[in-house]
Image 1 (cartoon, rainbow, N blue to C red):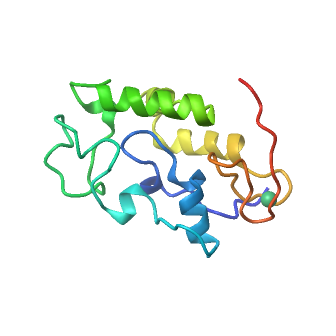
Image 2 (cartoon, rainbow, N blue to C red):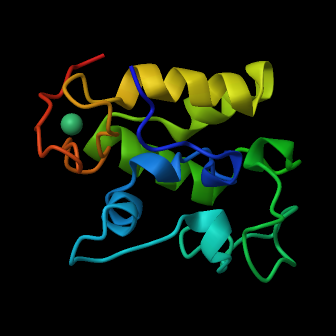
Image 3 (cartoon, rainbow, N blue to C red):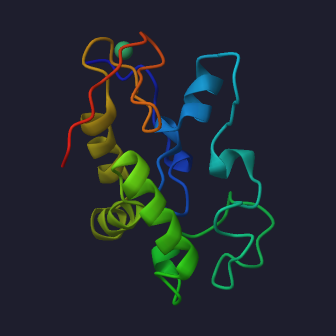
Length: 147
Ligand SMILES: [Zn+2]
């Protein structure tokens, strides 16, 4: 299947989120009239969820582009990442802590390969948003599969 939207390494955020499956990122690459984002690292702003309160390795950074993965921090898992993990598990059935554990063990490239398997639209090869389960390319809604 063609990988219609490349998942570049910089799309994997320091917290383990894959920005390529975020609704705001998909809106941006598909040029949709809604809230758009180029990804946490590329847009290079201080992460609202984590780094504004970070007292660990990413504390002194202005943006996210050079941030290390949170698992590299001696405070990991901190209160903020736990909160984010809980929020994503409850709302979107995805664990950023599991993502980080996978990246730590297998590296980013392998994580990206797995992300294609998990989030690619079977109809068109586009990526399905973790937030609304929608393929932004062909508008297919994928039914949520419970893990
Ligand atoms: Zn599709």
